[in-house]
Amino acid sequence: MQNQLSPKKYIETKGRKLPFGDCYISEEWKARGLASIIISKLMPSGNYIFGSYLIDIFCLGLKDTMYKFNISEIEFKEMLETFESRESTVKCDVTTIHNIIYGAIDYADELGFKPSKDFDLTQHLLNPDLITDEIDEIEFGKNGKPLFIAGPFDNSKRILAILHQSVGEGNYEFITEPGY
Image (tube, rainbow, N blue to C red):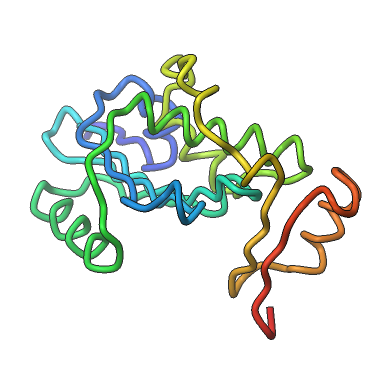
């Protein structure tokens, strides 16, 4: 009986070496400041690993990430349909995807924010060598400043305190909804 690697160990050891399949991004990511990104990696078996990244280009960087392991082409298409039913998406080249993800993480790090803890694993589905000079053409922040748009799961007080400390009062913008 052959020893099989756990999904986590497989991704850590083989994830970067697997070829990319199609990649998708939310169509309005630049205007909204929030990019939902899906990447696929092709396994030798013909199945896929599906990686998802929620990117805040205005302030927080990588807010959330997850993966699905060893899914069939039919399951992958069903997941894409579910994703696209919530948000209009377009295919995107893998280099642009990398520039957005890593650029947002770097920008957020300068402000004092770390990527989602799950990035410790899903980073192995990416290849930092694919970052190009195109990264300098992407606007991080909004109009030259961080813009924090509070979401339902954000700790607004903590985030605003970090922004106040890192860039100073008046050097960032924020939009909060009542109760956030």
